[in-house]
Length: 100
Image (cartoon, rainbow, N blue to C red):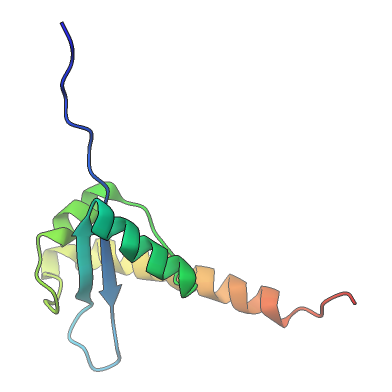
């Protein structure tokens, strides 16, 4: 008997947070081809990517511009701290003198 289990579709969510916002909010969500475009755009703009399929699925159920709910604050804060660390490392690497 063949297993016809549907392959899981890739899901991507873009979050944003600005000073003055009450919480991080949804900037984009998508699955399949749209998810690939979101990821491609992040890479092209040197935006760090954090992979967490379960969190992405949960966040993808929110609408564009919607603030994340309080029950997700802690996990999203962890993601934002990860992104901040990545940005700090990149800044330090870019500040190093380059060999000519």
